Amino acid sequence: MVLPLLYLMSFIRAYVRAGYFRPHFTFDRLERIPQFSPMTLFFAVFLVGTDVLARLLRKAFRVYA
Image 1 (cartoon, rainbow, N blue to C red):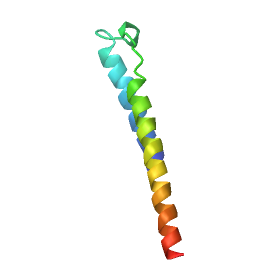
Image 2 (image 1 turned 120 degrees about the vertical axis):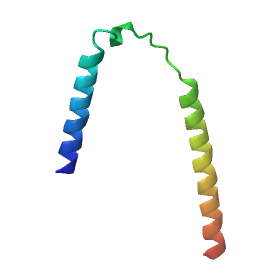
Image 3 (image 1 turned 180 degrees about the vertical axis):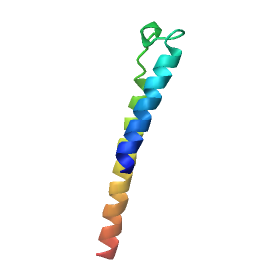
Image 4 (image 1 turned 90 degrees about the vertical axis):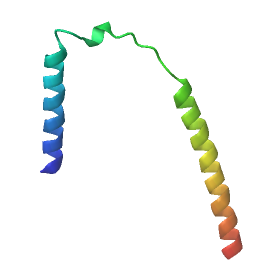
């Protein structure tokens, strides 16, 4: 019951907001500039962190095994 209600509320919010801003703003006016740098940095840190965590767990299991 809660999930359909949340979906409905978010849809209605987006619909009302789009209607309210339509005279002043449209998405066609936006200039889209792709930003790959933050995503690249996130994946690099994620991979390094996963590697460190795997090494830590491997070393811990060797000590206690």
